[in-house]
Length: 241
Image (cartoon, rainbow, N blue to C red; front, side, top):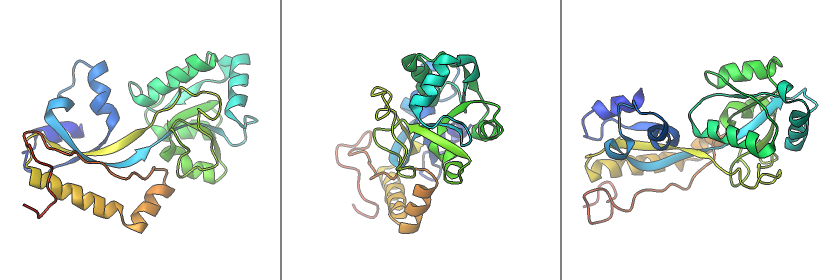
């Protein structure tokens, strides 16, 4: 996988990894055969974009709200399974917790990615699906799928009319993910600073922000480490000494 490529690359700042937090923080907790150690092999430079998770149904479904789904699933749990695009991830844990807190008894059906999940949702092969909002947002806008709720601490930027799980009666279902940019441990602070400055400059561009927002990503202010491992001074800006 991509993380293994970064691990085997020289720590010269020429190879970076853009990845969600899931494999870095959750992977080591559930897998014992990972060929990299996120805690020691990589260092995060900056966050790039936020990702929310949502529960969606076919737009033709009589289910209009999260409360509708819960009521229907409690009555007929066998008819209201929830598809999930990945297993062993934050999304998987969120879906498991939703089933437990809603007392629906819905079965979680794993898919190999969001594409097959959406295909079955559009074809009414499954009652509901849970995935990143980036998977659902265009179908929601087109009136083909209906996102019932999102799990962030605020509404998704791309779906301002869709309530959160907390607003819909599940105050403890608050979570989201984000993409981070990583370098190899041992990368020079100046090289890391160059990447940080370049990414923040690109993300400040109006057209980039518009495209990210429209495709379902939440825009982030950007955070970087105040210090770099082995340093006693703040991480320098590129070009400064």
